[in-house]
Structure formats: structure tokens, C-alpha cells
Image (cartoon, rainbow, N blue to C red):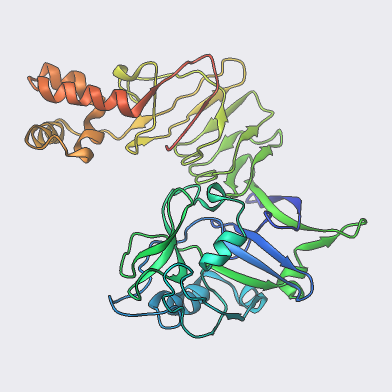
Length: 383
């Protein structure tokens, strides 16, 4: 009989700062405000769901007329959320005030299920700039408020600062963090809430999923999980993009961990001994922990007593490609992509007569790779 998937849940208080699982499971939704009188909760995506221009054309525009609003309340709403979830998302009266610094017009009142925060709301609902940062992406994200001109929109910078000056509405590099108000009396919400003896409410969240002896999924809001004794394997990509994850505890003496199991888990602490094999990591990187984007987290096996991990495998490239990239760097030393791909091959470059390129590659490695102490814990930062 095929192994069934078992999902393990946790409970958290239903209050601002807590997260709710709704829609696409890789995007947790954060509670910004609970309005007991209106029985609604204001939610925002904990990270950007995509990069997209505020508007499809460089012209005078307000939130009411912008293409991003149309997409959020049309294609995005219908493809991301189930019918039950859409019923729970309330249609809200959205007022977009004029720009507080430049008095650029905010436009007419709208009725939206999905919307972006305004400048005022971004100040009100977050503790500080650090609280506004897109933790995983470190990217700017749009607000619905106009910028200095009617052809620009305000945004949150990558460091969490509010930029009321804004940027061009056709800029397609900024992130989108949708927001909505959920009806607390809806069937969807009631099925996930529990009233405690002290009168407070708590909400049930999935933490991880196991199939047989394999951990197949860790949900992105999980901070710490303890696996049952029967789990002997962590599947490829099981915990990818779990930016809140700090620790995993398992009971078995040996556990197999497939490649990219912990991809983009910047705060996850792992038992430390860096162990390289010729197939996985160039000898030149002995004593270094790679965090370059080209590096692939390759944690193959953990042994409870030996604390042996294999990390940092590199994509292999053929010899012809190596020489092609060496020539590209020689012609254009600012070719960062080529530098990234060739950083493990500085010794080879020197041996093949590319001394100046080898020196640049070594400088790049020293700048982008951090020294590693195998006796201490480490984090897979930016892998």
C-alpha cells in the first residue's frame, strides 16, 4: 500500500504578527490588524509574489486605473485562491490619499478584494523599516500611493525605508506584496480557528509533511521542527525558501539529505564539519563555505556521531566552456556572471597561462566566500 502523506500542525495566537496559510502555500500571509468590531483581519503577503510594473504604460495614472490593480483583482485572485478562500476575502472600500509630501492625486475610492498598502498604512502597520523588508528577496516593493509625479508610484526600498518620491510606474523590477481583509466569520476562517478556554483565539498552521520515512515538505513559516523517529530522509527541495527556519531536530542516527533540501534557508543552523569530495567541491575551496549564487547546497548525509555534511556542490562546466569564459573575462573584467561561474577554477586559469584572470578570480573568491571554522555551527546564508 502506498504511504500516505501526514501533515503535522502547530498552533499560534491569532494576533498581529501571526501568519495564516491561504492560497499558494509557499507564500505565508501575515496578520497586520484584527478589527473585532468589523470581524475582519488585514493580511499582507509575507514576501513578494512577483515583480511587475505598477502600470503597463508611462502615462498619468492612479491606483483606480493602474494595470497592477486589474491584475491583482482578476488573474491573480482567481488563480491563487480557491473558491472557499475567495469567499473569505472581503471586498473592501479602498481610499488612496494624495501623496503626503507632494500632494500628487491619489484618485477615486475603489472597491477591491486585493490591494496594495498606502504610504500611511506602511507606516502604521509595521514597527520600523526593518519590519518592512522583504526578508528573502531584499527587494523594493510597490505601494498604491502616487509618487512625486502622476507617472510614478511610491514604494518601500530594499532596506525598508518608505520612498514617497516614488519611481516610474513602468518599472518592472519592483516586487508586489498583495494585501486583503479576511472575513473572520467565513467558513474558511472558522475551520482554522480554535477558541481557547481563556477566550483567546488560536489558529492552526501546517508545519511539515511526511510521506513514509521521508520529509517531503517544510512550510515556509516554520521556525523549528522536531521530526519523528521514523524519518530517515529529507527530500530534494523539502525546506527550500524556509526563511524563518532556525533548527531541525531528528532522532535517527543517520539521515539522508538530498540536494537543495535546504535551498535559501538563510538562518538554518547546521551541525558543522565541512566535508568535501572531489566530485562535489573543488579542493581549492577547502576551509571555505560558498555563498555565491552559482553554488548549490548539496547536503548528502548527516551522521549523528561524526557530524559529517557535504555542502556547496558546483555546477560542472566543460573545459571548452571554461576557456570561453576565461577569454570573456580577459576581454571584459567587469563580466560578473563569468566571474561567478569560474570562481572555482582560479588554479586552472593560472596553469593555463591566464595569470591576470586567475588573480581576478582569487580576488573575487576572497570577496564572495567566507572563511569557515569547521568546529562551529554555520548558516547556509544566501545559498
